[in-house]
Length: 102
Image (cartoon, rainbow, N blue to C red):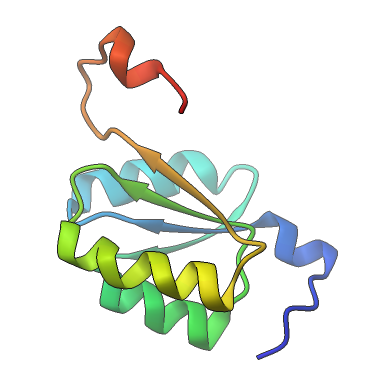
């Protein structure tokens, strides 16, 4: 797969969460502005990247499996370096620590 990005690629987001409620809520809000694909595991996210990528960004729930993230991060860094990775908290109770961007 080539890394040539078109304008339509800029509006494509992949959301990864093991929580179906988080996936549904993220998709319903993001689809107002973006084309959204969802994955319930890192394995599914990697498959979608290979089949449908590139995406402008991958958004993942902080609570996703650490072992899954261990496989997703090298895939993104190695094959999709222009894809942004954003980690979010699916909790409804945010603290100042949760709102900090590192």
